[in-house]
Image (tube, rainbow, N blue to C red; front, top):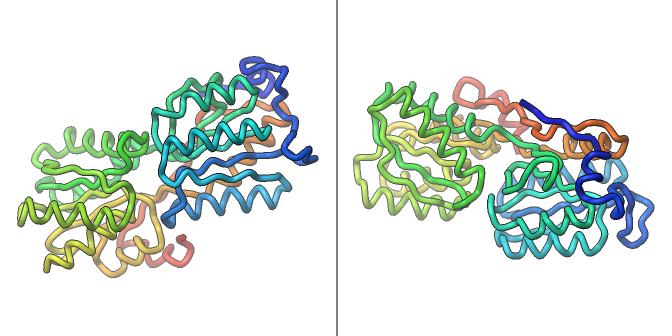
Length: 318
């Protein structure tokens, strides 16, 4: 049930006096787009940042870019600074679901439309933000669970490496995975779950602890992203076990390293979560500039990679 709004409606909500399309950063003649990235420390985030920045350059937009370095307070400050500079639009990759409310209120007061990419933050579509562009995280969790249930014949103990605590992506990938197990595989249990904060090194550290605590009781790992999955694979190997044989690993993202790990037999499968938002983001901005209606939720269709197709797509992965 998608709702629609036009730039006129949005401006009416947030205040016409601020002007939704005017540029005031350094008196630029170009439309100025601020991109608030939550962090830039892994292949997925780097690919996302490059996609948005490259598309801005290609289409002739001016960019103001910030990196919150995994700090919600810094991201809040970054957004406030962008608003003070007079950007025309803010593209926001939120670190957490809650915590950015004051910045969204400031953007609304200043008449600056906000576009969420890849994650949601607390707010009302059409009032606090224009649209969300991203994947269906619940569906990603379900697809990972469906593959794992089939692979383990509906039985086994699973450990979960979850993403950033409090983020919409971690909440929903966990929800989708659990819901599928509950409905289709009651004999498969999650015996431990801990955040690896979407980082390879942290994923390895957490997996090492889980192996020490659970010994030979672990049949599978569900990692919320490929970086943590690869960290887990490293930990499994260091423990003298064989990933893909002793412990089955499934994850989300679809990075080059993950596809290579599938080819090598270490990773079972990964659900794609595309980071290439640039073209969609600027399609939305151009529609808003021309007064067209914009869907308040734009879901990216993701692929699924396993041993049947990893070789086919590894060279085009990021």
